[in-house]
Length: 175
Image (cartoon, rainbow, N blue to C red; front, side, top):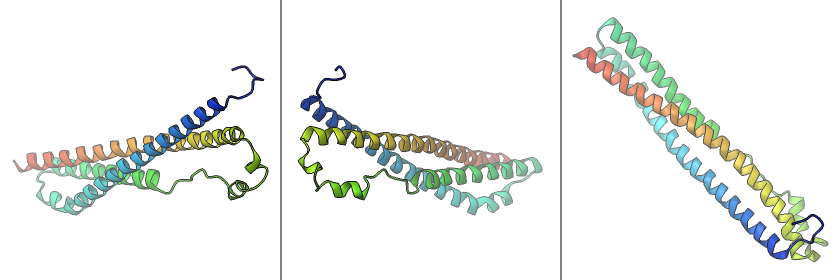
């Protein structure tokens, strides 16, 4: 469309519908990331609690200076990884996030002139800008959440590996 042409009612309505659909998809993505990260936080916390509780018993059953040093090192790495995963999940992703909202003063204008006398296409055109602004905000927020969720998942996997390595070292030292 060349600049200077009048906007098309159909095009404005279609673009508004597409923008709203994209915003809905992005919000659903954010909810999915929150659910996934909640699960990661729960697993990290549960495994951390078990590891911290069972650590002294594992140390008591380890024989040999090398095995004991190895198990203690693995224990520290495991606890740090699990704690990092839980902190990343809770403080980084699940904490309350700033939401983009329409100002109250803008909402109050919805029922006033000149807006209530504006043509439908003008209102839809303005809403496209508002919805796109919200979409850009949600996408940035979700990209950050996805990155932190990935780090929390890596920390949890490191914690799993640490628990497995401790069990293996304990089993080998008892043999």
